[in-house]
Image (tube, rainbow, N blue to C red; front, side, top):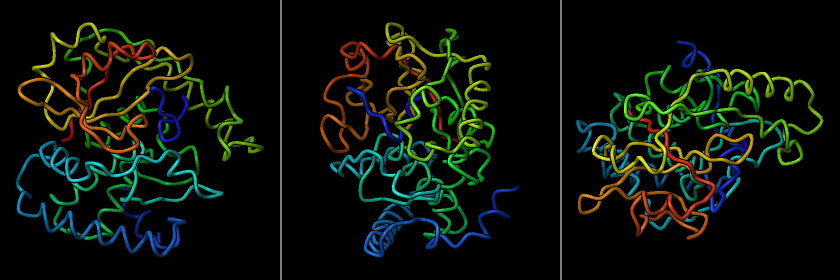
Length: 289
């Protein structure tokens, strides 16, 4: 995997743990960014609180549209020497954009609409079993992100139901490209954990929808579904993460684009977008619950 938090190629244990965390001490971000995060969260909460009874996927897409034209910035989670929860609502990469939209939607629907509850949701989504322990506890491979968030009943993996095409999900990109991951450098224990996680992911039975089959299944996709774009890059599972968005009855995508340097709606359909990406092989579909 090149972690999707880093790569954009033309491309209930939780609460016991969270309650022991002082978020201001773990984000590793500036006071100015904390202030901006709080301001943006308040704006989103006030704007979408009236839609509290809407389905999560409806909120995901509405919140995603709220962030149109926000800057794309790579490596937003790689700012600390050790793994800490990073909150950044000012700029996104493709994965953090989807994560933040989902965490905000779940917060709007929760009994407590607060910045701290949003951070708890984000931590629960981003980390394996909702527990931040070290760098390897982050769900770097997006197929693993889908798998673990389905276990946590945050999303439903629709990929096998929709296409049932076997996906050869052999991952080892991180362990084969250690120099690209500063937190793994010279940390033999983390490298061993990474290799073990990669082996576990590679053993799973996975499905995807090939890009030449998407037109047959697009009516089964909903606004706000989170889509992982599968790839033929050796050792990786996904090359990009996007949110499904229908325009005039046709399936487009809402995403943080490295090419456009901001959050955009694709001017072309998803099918056309994938047809022009030789590294892309299809999609996996995660439906917010």
